[in-house]
Length: 312
Image (cartoon, rainbow, N blue to C red; front, side, top):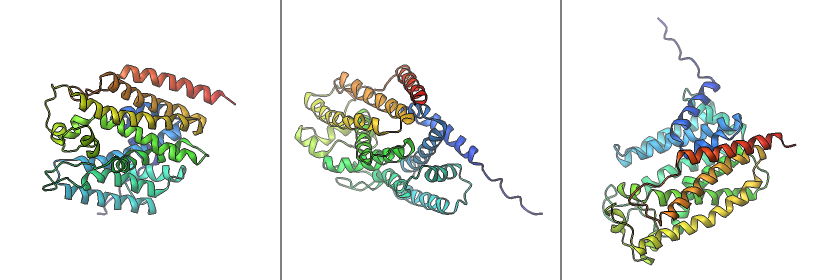
């Protein structure tokens, strides 16, 4: 009795799988995805699903670091084979392969995306055994490189899907990604510390006389001290400076995609504003942009997209 071959996954089904992953997991990003025309939305969802899988492999703390690195290497090897040959039953790989070809996305950018997810696993701890010591970044230059890998590269992929012609868009997309990631770092200080990760540069902690222990082992009910607020405010000011690049990037993006970037920037910049209004108390609660406000931003973005489609 012959064994039946598995039925090939269609491209439409592959993209449907990626859209479902994005809708379930993407949170802030998904509101921007909705404001894109369908072909671009499909491609963005495919890239997001690709990133999500890499992140999940990297962040599974039930698995030792060395095993997670091995799992990521094997997954990356499977992707490289699929990208070259097209021989795969993985729906995310099928969709991403189509998206990279359709929108001329260099495959090395996807390699950098994966490098970003492994950077936490390969981070150099300050002392002690690798599994137990906190992951830290000595300088802001070190942190910038981390932000580039985990966020700027995403921006460089996205603008190829959004569409642009001016090469200046690439540096602006890089810096916009840094603004987003610095905002995430501020929001997630407590959660990251619980996982043994401190993204606030050690040189900044020293400049504000804040100890690493004060970040790693603090009572959430204790409000930040003045020097801790000043430390976080410095990171917030850096993020705000990089958001200026988002303002310059917006007019360089194809008109039918501009609304999606506008939505994303408004949500993330709104998050930074809420952190600032809380006087940088990111310890007692996790600050977020309410869903209703995101929907209001999306509604304006959809109106912008409709106007762009009607414009000659």
